[in-house]
Amino acid sequence: MINRPDYIGEITPFIDKPLVKILSGVRRCGKSTIFEMLHDELIRVGVPADSIIAKRYTEMDIPEDLSAKQMYDELIAAMGDRPRCYLLLDEIQEIDGWEKAVNSLLESGRADIYVTGSNSKLMSSEISTYLTGRYVQISVFTLSFREYLDFKAGSNLSQNELLDEYIRFGGFPIIALSDFDEQSAYQIVNGIYHTVISRDIVKRHRINRQDLFDRVVKYIIENMGKTFSANSISSFLKSEKRKVSVESIYNYIRWLEQAFIIYPCERYDLQGKSVLKTQEKYYLSDVSLKYALLGYNRKMLDGAIENIVFLELKRRGYNVYIGKNDTKEIDFVAIRRDERIYVQVCVQIPAGSDREVGNLMEVRDHYPKYVVTLNEMDTGIENGIRIVHLREFLLAEKW
Image (spheres, rainbow, N blue to C red):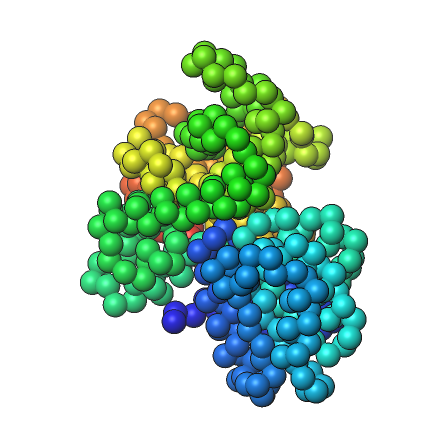
């Protein structure tokens, strides 16, 4: 098991606090492994091993009709007469009404509770009803480049070669742990994707026309990082003689978000200092999902590194937006409490073009501004704007 200490560092302040700790993220991003690390950390700080109760609630691990009441009774029985237990409940969203059971356990004062799930219905209205103000959410992502290097500690490849691999293969831990060829890696990612689609979306939401749903998803993935709307998708499908209502497309997008396949990125008006509700973009939870479905080619590089930078900003706790500055666009405005950074992303800065640097220069404040590129020859400082290689940006302790 390879440690991901950033997540343990995020969880540790909440150990023994009367809050449900909810770890959420796309399937196979490493949540279960983080639970194993948490188990070891609890023992390290003196928790008796028999006071840690770990349960998995995947379809393969539980009876199909297990109720929340049965789950509650089983956990109470497992706790016995111990005054304090630590409950690690994996993939709990598979149990209808789990919120009530967890709320009762929390109110007993005998349980420190940690749950994981692969669907943001974990954060649904039921939680608002039963756990208002008594939970903390920790978002789990696929591997950062720094974590990827840790996973590849025994490799003979240089950092730049490993970066190239990271861009092409993505950050699912199962891929990083082995030396798969490209075809095998994409096969595995394709399997993860289809598990999410079939189990978390098609089955859960009873989608009858999966062919139409698949075509909408393909369109969305083809247009990652670009502006589109439900109306534009509907018009495109009409041109292919397929009919899908705008309402259905909105539902499909929402369900993809709930399953952590995509993340929305809203537009932020730098002059009005407000979030705009139109022309948002979407990014994938891992770039490999696009290659697994569409194949990999170099033309995808711009979109891939933009997606990688977006995820890195999210991992570090920033709220990430597309910047609108009058008629100019900034790829990312990232805000975290009173911090802010502006980021433009490109494979290389085109000769004679000032879009990347020029758009940032028109932002009249003193927050850090970056252009992130794959071209070492472009790097440097221009008019106070740092032009950095993607590797340097991803590995920086702070920006």
